[in-house]
Amino acid sequence: MGNEGQLRRVFYNLVENAIKYTPCKGQVEMLLRSGPNPNTVRLLVRDSGPGIASEHLPHVFERFYRAETTQPRPGVVRGSGLGLAMQNLSWKATGAKLG
Image 1 (cartoon, rainbow, N blue to C red):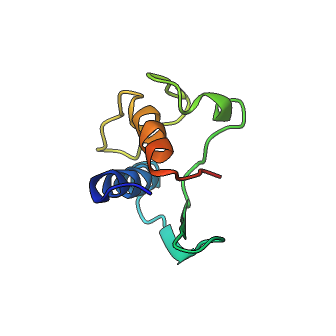
Image 2: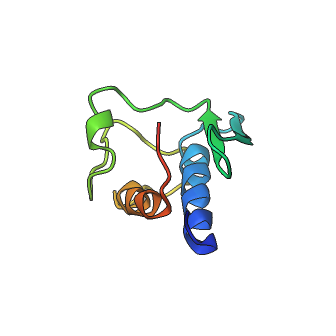
Image 3: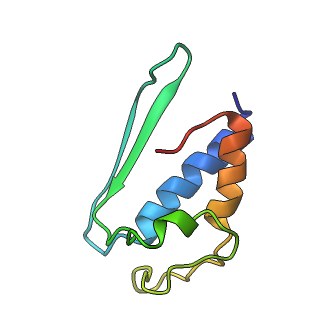
């Protein structure tokens, strides 16, 4: 179980990435449900963006890794490739699972 600051950062990063890579007039959906175990929740973030190509999936949590074919919507600055790597550490610290 993580502290409030860690959990806020995890939620913020997931939503920020969904918004960043969703085209204008696209959709971002968040669902919060009871988790499979007591005192747990399940967060689903879904968007209408291009997604991540299967060949990039094994690398998305590596520091400085960026899928060069994935571009944020116009007017949004590309990230450094550290966000998901840092969030992966936060997820592990909170006991969260990604899947």
